[in-house]
Amino acid sequence: MGAAVSAPRLFPGPTPSLDPIYDEDYFECAERLAFLSPQEAVINLVARPGRTLDVKLYKGLSESSLVSGTAASYTGVRDVLNIPLAGYFWSPDFYYKLEYKDCASSSGWRSTPVRKVKTPRSYHVRGRMEVILLSDEHTFDDADASGRWVADPAVAARRLSGEYVNDFLRLLREDPSYLPEDGTDLGKLRSGFCLASAIHQILTREDPDLILLLGDTTGIGAGYKWAGLGLKDPELGLTDQDRDSYSQLFWLRMRRMYSALTPSLPLYIVQGNHDGESGYGLERPFAVKYRRSYFPQPGGYQGHSLEENYFALPWGNGFGPENPLFIILDNEGYNILPPPGPLRPEDWTLGQEQKDWLGRVLDFESDWKFVFCHHVLGGWPRGSSEQETRYAYGRGPLFTADDYAPYCSDPEAVEQVELTRLFQDRGVRAVFTGHDHIFSYRAVGERLKALCAGSAKPLGELSWYRGALWNKFYGCYGRYQAEPAAVCDHTDFWGPSGYAKLILTPSAASVEYKRAANNQPSTNIPPDKRPGDILRALGL
Image 1 (cartoon, helix red, strand yellow):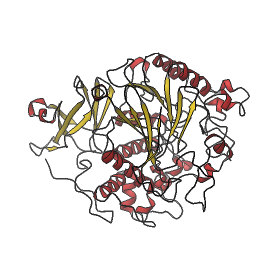
Image 2: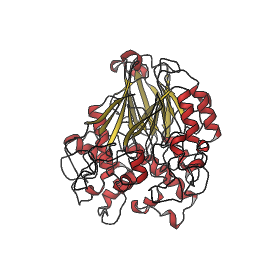
Image 3: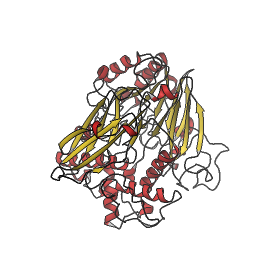
Image 4: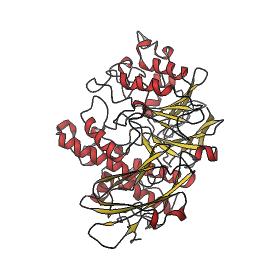
């Protein structure tokens, strides 16, 4: 193997580990493995610009089977390479590694570490699986703002590229109690630090089968932050070339931020309102292009969207009663009203094609059906805050006609009411959303559960927590750390920074919400709870 590649010494504190997250000399990010079905997978590679590579893939059902005779060779690799895999997933584990070199060199092969992947078959062999749910990381919030300017241009460059998350992760590897110092450049990058801490918890304390990102990660649809990241302000005008280059930048940024996870953990994308694919956004065609290039997802099966923005992912052996079924919806791409988007709860839609597909997929029998989307298809009739009345932002856990009756002249016209009945009739066990940056739970009828899966970001939104609609539907936040005293004697929901874990066996399902990072004092999470501690556990 070639020499390890160390990160630039930008960060003070412990000496970062020389073990690279990925080889920055040859690749833009680490490889990504994803299952497209229980029987097929893809390994996605992104070569550095200007590099032309020879690549060998070694694959097998044990580490000892990765010998020279098992290698598949690829020559002249430039830009993006998707390596299809099929027929290797009858075992609970799958192993692979890559060797690579510059095409112009006759020697100098380098190698990735051996990657061990739990296959979908593992669910039936081991009788258990775990799904990590991360949402609303909001790393684009690390943009410069009043009083939070990043002075060091090298740190600003790592922030824009996404590498700063890996730099934080290296420091956490050396010292899990590491915290960036307030007032320093690094102390201003709290969203990236909290994401790195969540990744550190997943790597050291979890054993997931797959990861779902429930939206608002990339920042392509967060143009109001771009100037603070050193990019053009959309208010001053953008060309299609700008939208194309920024979409590529943000999706590559996301791949880099998750490079410690993507080689071994299948990671899938749920569209959020800040990810650039809203039907009313000018960035959408460019965001779709680069997401599909860097994050291939299931597409085409049972009428899945060819854009891979909504899809069904069966686990175990495939579609069947004994296999979990994960259904990913896109609640952003088919709302075509001009900005700021839907004006009323009744305006939100999945679009007819996606709704028809959803009905077909829900016809499959499964003891465990779960739906994932960024937010409800409706919500209370307010904007991003309750003071905003010009548009409807999808806030809140509103699922039934009774929920909407006080706010809509015809609650039956709200698409979420229709979807909720469909979920109840077709045996969906739970709907998971993000968007509201908290962990919250409610029962919708006898069997359907609705969970807001939390947020990995550093800051809770105290102004949201004090709203009348928020208190009606989500309840009380208990003690917010900026408050001198508790505002009520209980806590109905937990704020950031956290992630949820769905645990499945053939006979039971449960969810845990865990603290992701030490982000005091900007949360209602008690200060004695450490990263990785369970804040709430419940059965489904």
